[in-house]
Image 1 (cartoon, helix red, strand yellow):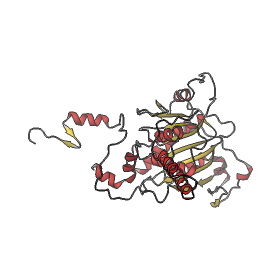
Image 2 (image 1 turned 120 degrees about the vertical axis):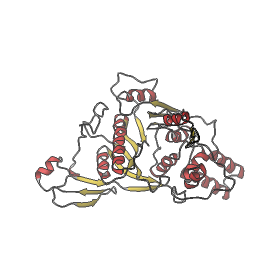
Image 3 (image 1 turned 90 degrees about the vertical axis):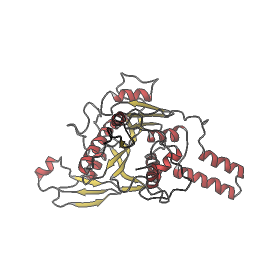
Image 4 (image 1 turned 60 degrees about the vertical axis):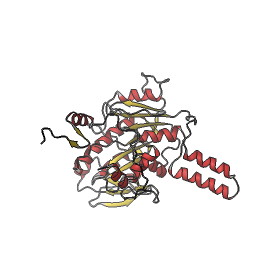
Length: 385
């Protein structure tokens, strides 16, 4: 499939190259921020599975350079235009304000105290203000490296806890899909658990966690498990995410680990350990023989599956509640539809990617095909065959 047909099919792919983003997934994080205001009061961020670096690029341009995109930038433009109509600003002042929003100012000084760490097994090209680590998010040695990158001057290797914890942990990682939905959903859930285990070790109380998920039939169990350590769990589908895809993003806010819980990558969750589940009196429900459906005050739908006998309740810890997190669609309806086809202008020039993968997994295959005499999907035949 050529570049022109791909550009015509996906407007966000074309728009990302025009605006200088490394990948179209940058718009997913921008639209999530518009809906949930993720970056408010955030100075320390960890980006997991970061390569090729589109989400880290968003963090660099928003948190360090102070640029505004999406709804925030549009509101400032509307305010400047309104002030000009009312005579509160001159035309020159309005033009300067609009130029400051649309053009990146290289002289803008970075914000003080902002620390961004990007972690991935694949190498990633550098970004301004972002510390990149090539490490495994499931290995215990990654946490000391990350804490040292966050505080290179004050880091104490002997300290038992971090003096400057993390405000936000994001993860856009996903496995190479096989087409078998059950297998893909399972592998993605394990990747989310790996990101969550690391987030539990470094998040400060009240911190936020955002990660990609694949929605399946039993995904509500995952939401219920996340609700144990976060006050609010919601699921969002950005408009830039294709409607034909089963991907979505879980947005967890208000990190509040149960009393007595200690996170560690040496004994991660899902490997024989369990989170101590709190049972406040307000949430205790008697055993029932029939399932009930209750809409809570925070908008969550709680399902009480009941128990047929006392033995069943004891096997599950006496709590058989499952609830469905509220679902939100992110992105302005006036924005592009990622599944729609838009006509290209006649003078359209196809652009190359802003930052090609540094070491893609298929690099070895490309080298072998080149040695065999093939190029661009075509293989030269020898001997006139």
